[in-house]
Length: 249
Image (cartoon, rainbow, N blue to C red; front, side, top):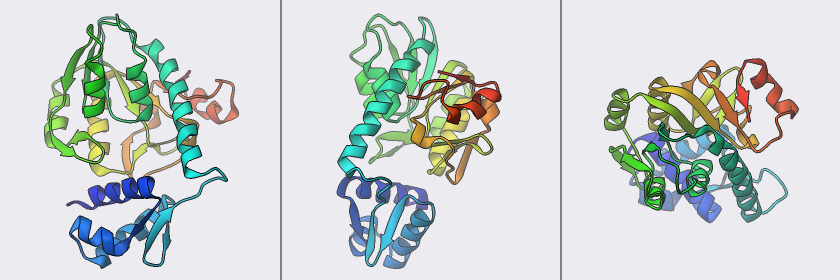
């Protein structure tokens, strides 16, 4: 198992259970406790978790409980999703990757919208079956079970043979200087291929993800055409993106 996949699983477990033990992770991931400790240290150094004796716990970013933060993020993602609907029109070929905002967007699609959607997300593909006018293309590859998305060479090669009108990208981190970045190496490659094979790129990002950076580069900020957040367009945090000519909605 690659380091990036191990760390994704660790983050998923911490998100679900609020804590993890090194001994349990060693058994679940079939690696040594030393390897687990190195993974936890890397994640802690990135500010994603808090390392404690014997394991790690969820990083408390604000006074809310974890549950409250999760609900708050979902509310913001719902606002992002409904704004992004304005970017889609009949006849378009659209790439949609995984993520909360993209799932909320798919749930909100008008039933009569006639588009072709390519996705590497199994939950999104299943949700799209409720939309009779949508043609669904699932990008096959290696399945990351926890995230329920496909990644790998097969997905990237499939995207190389496509010219989409629009890529709706769920964003982990976005920064004016660094660009779009991901915590997972495989996902960064998939997103990069989608950017390169789309006429327009729209980043769907709740404001918490702005001005943050992850280890793996997806694309430069100049390759983003549109930024969709839950904020009003006049918010100061959005000004640097508007200054670069990015459409902010």
